[in-house]
Structures are given as C-alpha cells and as structure tokens.
Image (cartoon, rainbow, N blue to C red; front, side, top):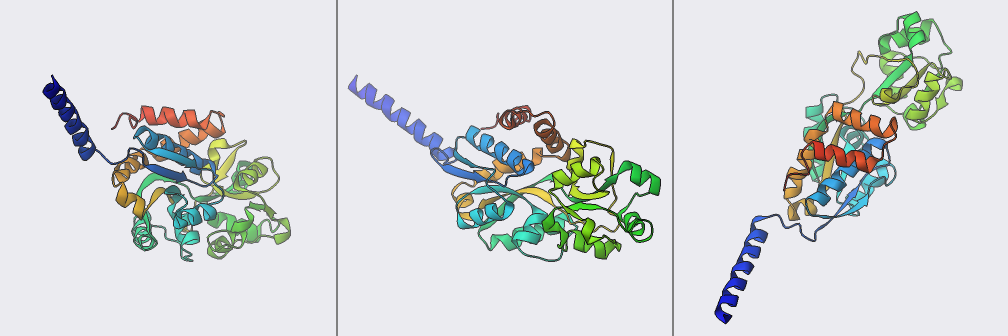
Length: 305
C-alpha cells in the first residue's frame, strides 16, 4: 500500500509539473492595466482587464487614470504594464513629432521601431480608428453647400467672417489642430468668437446652435443631439490614429503569451464593434463592465485557454 501511495503521488506530481511546463507561467503573475479617462480608453482597458483575468492573471485595474500624458509617463516608469493608446496621439504627443503621418501602416512601422528603444512594445493595433473631424450644423451646410473643409475655408473667408468655432483649447494652437487647419485650408476665424470646450461639450454646443462649426472626435456622431454634417478632409490633413495596445518589454519577455491574448482582443475591436460598445455606454447608459463582459463572451474570447 505504501508503494502504491508513493507511486500515485509521484504520478500526480509529474502531471502537475507537466502542465506547468506546457502552459504559460501566469499563475500568480500580476499585470497592471492602465489607461486614460476617455470613454474609448476606459472601454478598451476594461476589456483587457476582464480578458486577462479570464486567462488566469492577477490584474490590477488602473484604467481611467487621468490624461494620456499621465498614463504614458506611468507606462514608461513601470507603474503600469499594459495600456491602450491611439497611434497618432503617441506619435505626435508622447514621442513629440511635429509631422503627422496619414498612412496607418507607415505610422505603425515607425512607432513600433522608435518606442522599442524606450522599452515599450506595441503588440497589436485594432482596426478601430478615431480622428478629429470638423462638424457643421446641417442647416448651415445645406444652405451654403458645405461638403468639405475646403468649402468651409471659402465660406469663412468670403461669406461669414464671424463664423463661430468650438474647439478644445489644447487643439487651438496645435499644428495638428486648428492652427494647422487654418494653414491647410485657408480658414479664417475671429478669435473673439472662438469657444474653448471639450470635444463632447463643443459637439453639443454646435447641435444647440451656440457655434457654427466644432472640432471633435469622429466617434462623437453616435451621440448626436441634432442634425450635423461631418466635413470631408479633402486634403488629407488629419493624421492616422488607430487604437493600439502596448506592453512594457520586461513584462512581455516574462509573459510572451500576453502578445497573442491582446492581439486576439485587438482583432475584435473593429470600427463597427467599438462604435457599438461606445453607444451602449454613452447613449444607452449601460454598465461598462457588463458591456465588456458580454462582448468578450460573444466574441469567443473567454473560451480560449
């Protein structure tokens, strides 16, 4: 009997060791997921938190952790391990380039190469992209045949010199914002009529008739409180900016299986899927954690080992 017990125990130990050797070393591993406090960042962060928890990691949730600059600093300092960010934001703001790139593939190539020197590995980018868009009221656009940003430039110069603009303050003097648009499209705005509002507030002010045009995210139209028109960027001014996920190099080296898990999630974040998630949270007012859980389940991401 004693020999039999020893044999059984030995076999069980061998099985346990064999499973540990074949599977990823994630039992007990702690991964800190961070992210900025916009709805898009928080959604992507919540998806990553729940996915990694389902894969067996101990996850510390630090999503909604402030502005993108703060999150970037935390990632670079090692305070967080995983974070989602837009490639265009990273290229222009975090890596301090003053020349926007409009080709998503070229941007990805240069971004991944440069940031690898900072110990940050970009493991995957999603199809979902969010760019700045200039919106105008539909009645104004229809009456003046405004279809493109070039049309708006002509309108502000020759028809209405007192066109009211709503824009985030940080984008007013930025080359990738109003300052650059003025140069690219020969726009003309009376500075005394410019209102500094967040993209969401500016979008609402536009719909309520408190301004004539507003610079906002291309995703804002899913929450439209009124009939608006997004003007075509006919000179391709706005830079490419796909949602992407980054991991600190030492963490990825210790847990290489993270790449496949996060790449699976990035592949599921299509333009349509992310827009639907955004609408559920911002328009339907559903609980973000539940929305994320349902999405992961429906996408089959919780079924993978």
